[in-house]
Image 1 (tube, rainbow, N blue to C red):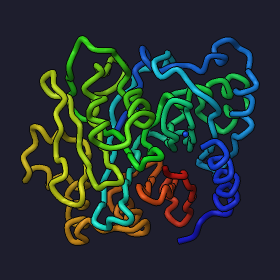
Image 2: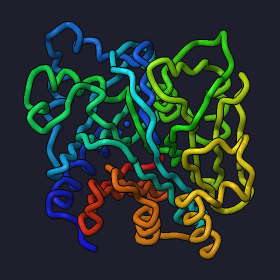
Image 3: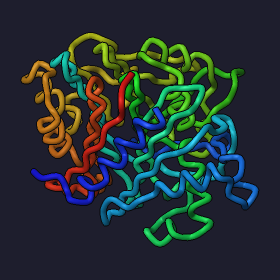
Image 4: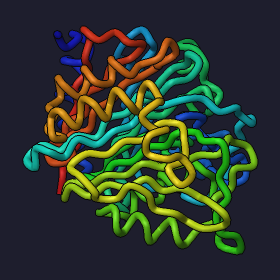
Length: 340
């Protein structure tokens, strides 16, 4: 396989920028919780906003774009998105090679532009994430050139669909049939919790503490569960069941995975009947959880669906990000997030 020329050209500028500033299913973005960059709603762009938008560049014709976000953002602010139906995604962690643990994810949904986003909040960890920009009102390449579209991009930090931070913690979500967590806590959107975790947690253990601090709002999204892994080799599936945060499949083996069923009420034998989970289990068991980037992408290709929009592998100890859009498996885009 080869890396596209566009990605090769984009990698060097992004590495330099990152060094200078060092930050499935339905995206589950609750309209009540995501937040706008302060000047985005005012209709005028600050110097900081302008610097952010100057970094915007197109990587491929999917289209995939990349952006480096300057400064901070309001994690609990508001951005309006339309209610969405659920869809399927596949995620797995391959930690058998302790020097190069891998977190991989297929995002399976209807076609839309994707944004690779680097953030460096002053009060949190730097991170890289992928965003489906249709939920920001950008549905085509042309939208990225309009004033309205560019203001929408300033809200992108609040909608990470999957990502990794500079401590080597990665996470993503997948839709499930139901999700009911604790009530009476600070309410955040079902995608917003991922931004909070990427900004504030260095390990799976710290991430689980954050899940215990919030009430997740699925009003405008399908039910979701969450998959996490970190550079120490820890991993977990987080589910909201019966008004509780339930941690499933944590640390039992050097690999882990999640698709679109709840572990809490799906027997082990039944899980293997799922084509994607069964195929991932077979491959990861045979490899004892030791995959490299090539084999991780190969497994993502095996479990891809007709509507897989992007496939991404995060190197939790290398900071390497390898991204494929639209199942163009011979066109890899490679980036690096400097790790702490």
